[in-house]
Amino acid sequence: MTSNFSIVQCLFNRDKYELEEMRRILVEAEQDESSAAKLLSEDDMDINPVRTAVLRSMGKIHPAQMDYYVDYMEMFMAAMKTMLHTEAVVERVPCTEDEEQPCYATSQRLSGDINFAAGLIASEPVYLKLAERYSEEEIPEMDELAKDSIEEFINVLNGMFSVSLGERKIETDLELPRFGKNVIPHGSQQLRLRVHSSVGSFQVVMATDEFI
Image 1 (cartoon, rainbow, N blue to C red):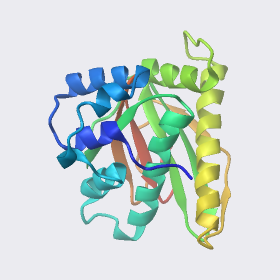
Image 2: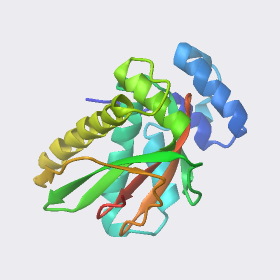
Image 3: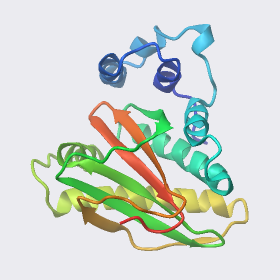
């Protein structure tokens, strides 16, 4: 079972560090997690810090989707560490700004007992870095390997999410991942969240239908 505890998210939730300093902490924690642990006080502790951040960002919006969006983001942030080997934190307010262009989006829809779509949008440099982390290969420019790597990451992650829904007797089918360039997302019941990672920032988008 994947742990939802994150030292860096605990630190980020306490608003003690400016963004540039937080980026340094993420990079250092990726090399040695104890460097972040040394900064953690008893008051900073939260066993579910990603859940805390997402609930804060949602407030009272989209109450019917709240459980799904929170659970998905906990799984996404855990996957950043286990599948992309990347330290990351999520903002506690909805993302309203678009990515610097050129940017690329990858998403996937789950249909069945519920309708759910999720994926990410990142500027080209960050998209390539994330693809490199997943593929463990150098990707100097946008190509099919970059696209396929992020599609596979999202497909594996969303497959795990579908399985977790199935354990709650919520049956879903995965549709094929979708890809787009310079996407401005406009999904129904949409939530956009800014994620800061050791390779740059990007946004995760969740909605009840496709946003690409």
